[in-house]
Image 1 (cartoon, rainbow, N blue to C red):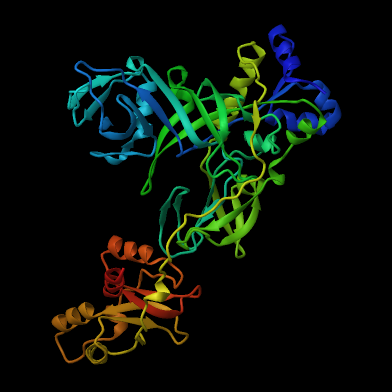
Image 2: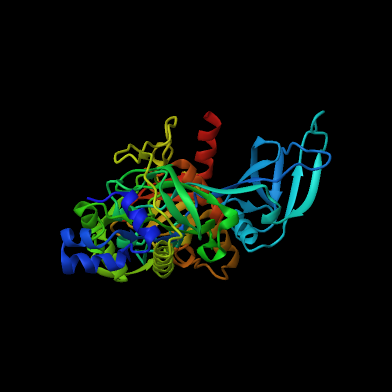
Length: 496
């Protein structure tokens, strides 16, 4: 048995034995857990990935005359001001009001750390003690009284991987997902990630000193959505001491802004159990591949998988080999482990005893909502036709049934296209003879669809995004179950 006090004494005296999590695996394989626990004092870990739940508290100091900021923007990115007169919290995912997804809170934070000037704009109501109503100036990180990075949810223990069963490309927080299981993406650094090396949170707790973006930071509690073994941490550190090398603003195309945050945590090897924990390998860390092609909170699980399989660059789905790509940087995580190792060996970084534990069990509840309306509650019967149906017959059906959309199906009722009254009108206008053609000649083959259990808000968003007025409702085998139109949704919303 060792104590953190004993390990800190070794650090001060310069005879501490520090290894990275990568090196520890090999040491345990060679020596066993008992001997490894005797030989090694500290194991350094690292992760470097997109951590959207991050941001910075800032105090700007008082202007003359003073202002109580009602709203504030930094390079046209709005920060939250409901705190005090000249305090604000800037979240990394907040986007610019002029540049949109091309620039956001993460970019402002990175610019500040790089020493750049940032435009500050603020407006206020004006009061007797804070008479000023508007200010525009420029600030640097040095000008701020305090700049405290406080991240509600970082250092995910592991992450669910993502794929896409739908027939359209998806832009998500897990990156770009190609249609028809075209790829898989995953996050997290697996066997070198901090929480995987201390799964019982014996040494990582409230008050644990960590490496945060190049500075010394601290764990201040469990992170939001903490659900072991998908644990998370809430962390803080001084932005003025951080390095742009260990943080990167990033844009996920079609989704938004995020920031790659570098975190390293030293794991003291107090006993044989801690040596065993830090010997974990990627093939012992399991997660799930979930299907983002189904737009609901409890997305279906495609299959179980290990981090070893994910890191191999390919996995098998439905008998097919699918390419896998990471969203975290193993290279940067490795560099963080090495830098933290160097600081400990040089006596620049001491360990801390947690003042309280991180919970090992948790319950993650969904948002409380009123009754969720799904597509099946509003869809109507779909009128289907064969691709061989003549345009003249199609026009008769549209008039007789008083509909604007006809689903084109094969002999198994599988959707292959859609014909609208507008398609028929164009066919008639372009026809030069009696033969107007067939449904297959005018139908739209790439059909945007919905599922019966999809929330109506999702269906409405699809119509808006693609500028269409109806969606065929299909099952998992693309068999037509019904149709939902913008008119159906309008009627439902009117009843609400």
